[in-house]
Amino acid sequence: MSSDVEVLGTRGDWQPTDGLLLEVDNLQVEFRTRDGVAKAINGVTFDLHEGETLAILGESGSGKSVTAQAIMGILDSPPGFITGGELRYCGKNMLAMPEEQRRRIRGPEISMVFQDALSALNPVFTVGWQIGEMFRKHRGMNKTDAQAEAVKLMQRVQIPGAAQRVKAYPHQFSGGMRQRIMIAMAIALDPAVLIADEPTTALDVTVQAQIMQLLQELQEERKMGLILITHDLGVVADVADRIAVMYAGRIVEQSEIYELYRKPAHPYTKGLLDSIPRLDQKGQELAAIGGLPPNLTRIPPGCAFNPRCRYAQDVCREDPPPPLREVLHGRLSACHFSELLLADSPELEVTQTADAVEAALEFGPDAAPGVDIDQTTGFEPEAHA
Ligand SMILES: Nc1ncnc2c1ncn2[C@@H]1O[C@H](COP(=O)(O)OP(=O)(O)OP(=O)(O)O)[C@@H](O)[C@H]1O
Ligand code: SF4
Ligand SMILES: [Mg+2]
Image (cartoon, rainbow, N blue to C red; front, side):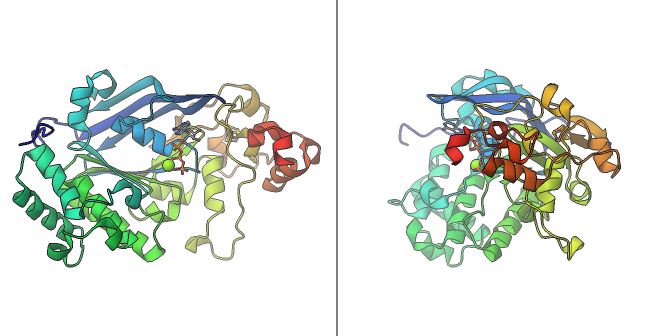
């Protein structure tokens, strides 16, 4: 047995209470760079139970991957630092654990599938060797037994001809098959929590659906808590139980997926839904959200979404960011006016349109009074000239 072998106990060392696996509590992460301090995560809170699928949705840069990296303990540090909050696994705060204990969670208990399988796999080792490493390293198996386990896993993730292809290299597989290999590696040690960070982004639509179906099957069969990170609501709509929508490092809405899809409680979620084609709203014109997410070194005061929000009022610009609060049973939203939005109330005034936001971006604030160009882009006006 080589010196880097670390035989770990199987599941049972950690027992969730009432099925509660993971608690992310007021997590804060910042990146200290030469351009300033980027406040990437600003008080994210959610939990995950056994057998549950939580989707985390948000535009590029909203903090989805950084949240996952913080949970896994693989944050790029420096420049990234966890500056507040707790991450509890089976009730124990992982941030207070020695690294040695943390390593026993990473992989065997909480595992991750990355977006880009090609760069996550090592090109010079066969896929069987790479999957087998999990068993050699963490279960103390010999090469022959580890290879046999690798074949079984490849069969489970539906790789045709697994017994022969166990000796093939990553470049000899298609993108979808490589992602299946990544999934096989991630579930090898039977983790309680699986985080899939945009697992299908690089794949075509049919393969995306197959990978999502595979993840769902594995989640049900193993009773895993599954976190699906995506920027595409369409990809997760059929598989997720709950959804957390992120904007500028905060969760702005959290809800059971059907309810959120039927009627969003936050203007940002509404904007996302209005910008995708929907079978239940045929013929309706698609409307993109104007503007861009803020530069995280200069998040606008008040609600971070205010420069782009069609309902923004003075209170949104002046008061502290609205907290995530229960606006209906089981529905959380961080907006001053969620109740009015949910009720389609005529009292909810449209103060700026997406066109006005875009005009302010292109031609300056005078094109649309009230829209602060610097807040909208996070850049100086010259940078957009
Ligand atoms: N290594 C890093 N160095 C500096 N800043 C970083 C680093 N990684 C992330 N950030 C900051 O954290 C923010 C959130 O990044 P994150 O990768 O979580 O976004 P994301 O929501 O996963 O976006 P995407 O959909 O593009 O993957 C980034 O906009 C960036 O400002
Ligand atoms: S708090 Fe104000 S700016 Fe923020 S989403 Fe609600 S209405 Fe829009
Ligand atoms: Mg990401």
